[in-house]
Length: 518
Image 1: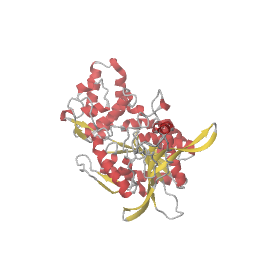
Image 2: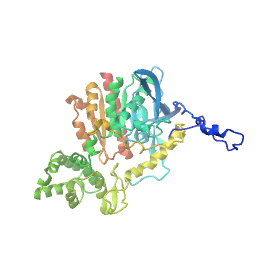
Image 3: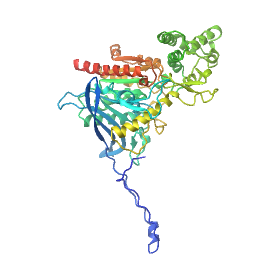
Image 4: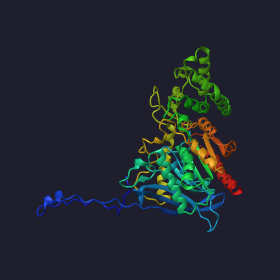
């Protein structure tokens, strides 16, 4: 629904007075008066702030609100103007600098879903303010807290957080169809247009430019790199892929029974089993290495054997798989060596009547039923939803000065079903587009962040996808990989947040430096 205010026209209210003395026939036959929707306008609010970093005050300007997204209209090949289609909510943080100073880098950030707002990267990792919620075993109680973030990426780059249509406060215009934006191509085009608009309006075409995406946002970022180049000639300096999934087939989405996905999840299962004490005194690195070695060769072989895998050979693989995952060998055997990820999170700690988190498998929660085949909720999502909602709803009004009676859609279900019509009959895979962007722009750098305990976008599957990029061997050096002792939102874990903040700042600095040197 569209936001309304006191200036929004409303239909006339029927009079409650008597019909006596009026022409009632005319009243019933004349068409009812209609009102056109108000033409939407940008409703941006600007505020000034200071962030203390290392004994120095950084002064910055925050701008937040909705930008009207317009589309060019042609009728019989005649350009008839533009038409408002959507109102996209964004928040930018721009460091104050003297006139004429060299343009700073700017990073455009978004989360995934599809259907997620950008609140997670905004208040969890990148922004100048962050939520304080605690961590596994020491979660803080409501109403939580919001604190300054001296590790913000703002120290090295201006920031623009984008909420795609139907997420956050973003909506289709009044009378418009939001569904037309709920799909792979429309999403890429609309987010790309917002990036172009912001860049042009703020005279930042000569600034180094970066994308930061998380989860489905990594898939969006990879495709956007190609789209921005091919559509606008906008070449990027770098892409930050946080909890990467560039090929949905690699994790079994839309193809739940593919052996490829079972293999891709295995090293994550082993890491999670290690975290929950199923590997004794072995180091995590040893466990992960053993799981990766098994996933590289023996496990795919075993899955391809089918009914031919019998006797001692089958028993050997059952035992091997059970040892790596911490599951009961009989359960693994009944599963035919194929461990679906939601069932794994439900089964691993069943004896303790606990389920394991999917987004962050360090978290556990009580099982709704001891014999349930799958968990009824993700305890890691339960842990973060409340703190981020409280922090954002305070921040946007009290700090940023933006008022709206709309519900801020943290994760919207309205975007489903999400359209993948471009990929009919094949896996949703954007690696060809990322490869194309890198071949066309050999200066493009890619940073990939993985969580050992991320049960949504497993690290091994993501790494294998990137290893298959169709780029010259020399360009593989443009891709860097960082691992963290946490889950999907690795910044929930404080040591990981600090390390990741430093890694991203270093990535931006080096990417800009490499361009300057070139």
